[in-house]
Image (tube, rainbow, N blue to C red; front, top):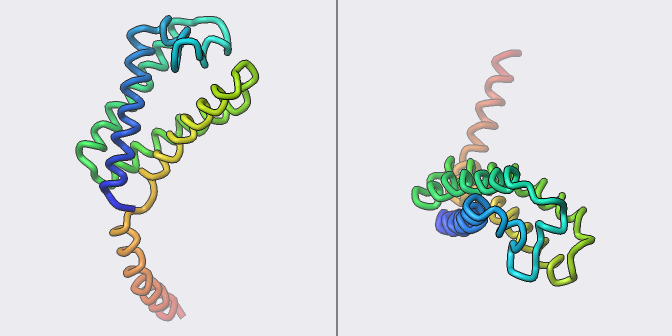
Length: 157
């Protein structure tokens, strides 16, 4: 996978983190009542308002913003992978939770909810996917590793 594609994926995730995190952290009641759009709340139907919990979610997204923003600005393989792994650790269970709690939403909101959460998972997978250069290095080193392993086995006999 191309570094520019990974960089774009990181930038999109960072933008998501900035929007969601900023809103939840600095306007938690508004976030609870109106996320993602006025008239289409996805949070309020899930239970009573808890300012502490909403602000914690905002802080989580802002932490992901710091990591993912850094990865987008300075796209190094290790940083991109770390950001992707962090997003996967959060996004997969988040997606599963929402898949199991769609009853209170209308059809359009169900689709929007699942698609938006699944996009975060896909973008995170892009960040952890091997790069082209890395795949090429692995392919070139595989014959050498097999030869070395074979020589080691012969020496032990």
